[in-house]
Image 1: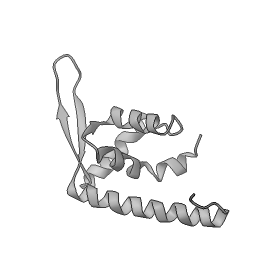
Image 2: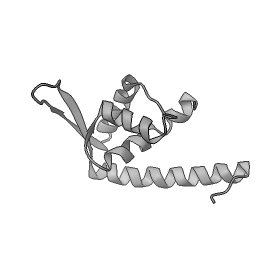
Image 3: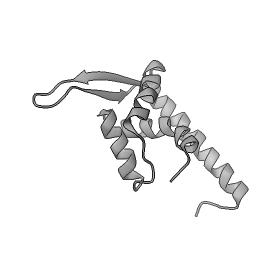
Image 4: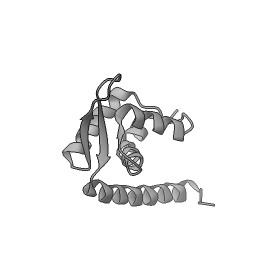
Length: 110
């Protein structure tokens, strides 16, 4: 529905927002984004993992492997304190960007 470039530019914000609630594994992150967007935002799980790795390298998130009996091993990610700050910055930037675009195209927040 949306261009891949538009989705790519918002992935980190979406992931940080999901992880702000509680630790989650990659598949769950992808499914929550789909569900909460009314299925308008869909990401292949394979496209999420490079972003998660990049975010780990930035120390925004921390991952750990969890094994439970009867299930396969999963990597759960949680937000770090640097990730919390990044989320705040990303939210502010997104809000300013959306307001500027809306101003240019003639839409305003109701």
